[in-house]
Length: 277
Image 1 (spheres, rainbow, N blue to C red):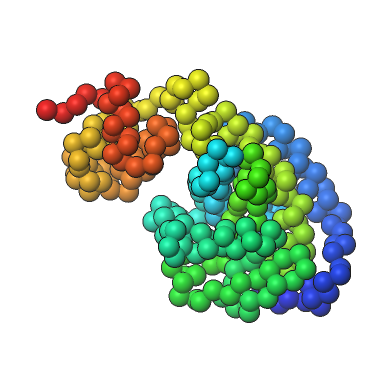
Image 2 (cartoon, rainbow, N blue to C red):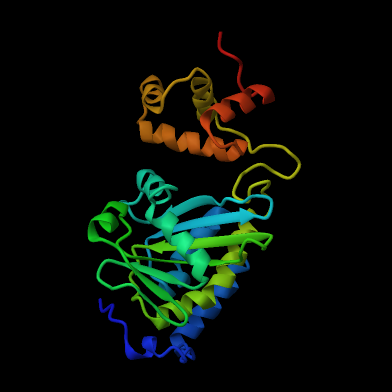
């Protein structure tokens, strides 16, 4: 696929990129469908239909921050078998995570930022391109990606989104489409997470109740309280360590805590588990 930046991209005073008839029809369809979103599964399905035709991708990382918190909470959605929990943790590492760096870059520029291995770094009037070493991009399993967001440190709710394994070219047309889509994506994200606090993506409801934990999650919590590792719990429950890791992540979100020890402590206080002798 051609990713060459054309002359129209280089003309900083040109930003009147009209959508063609098909794109306009798809765009209106995407907006209309966004009004019916209620749950996270709806969000994933929405991104796989008309949205996919406008901005083809395989991985989405969503970051949401409420005014009461300085940090973002992240989730990912993927249709790719190559991107999973390990890649998610890697690219969001605060020290050297590729997507973490990209979100920081977007926060400074406030415009779509494309990350490619085959293009040189360049900033235009309404978007930017950043070069990534091939080895680093390969390790991320994102191929090439774009980041954008809505809101800033003064916004009550701000969102940042990364679209990875991107099929669309890094050019003004793709950036323009993303600019048009972002407000509706922001509203969709807020809508499906609006009843969650104190962190927007947590599953703790406004009345202080927690979302019920499954029987397997309660069993994992008991072993967390006993100080077992994911590998040890996996052996005990005869499942893979990755399955246990997924259970742990769900538990942290449902209890709205930051780590395993906090989860065990909160579960004890709530009477969800009993203290092991």
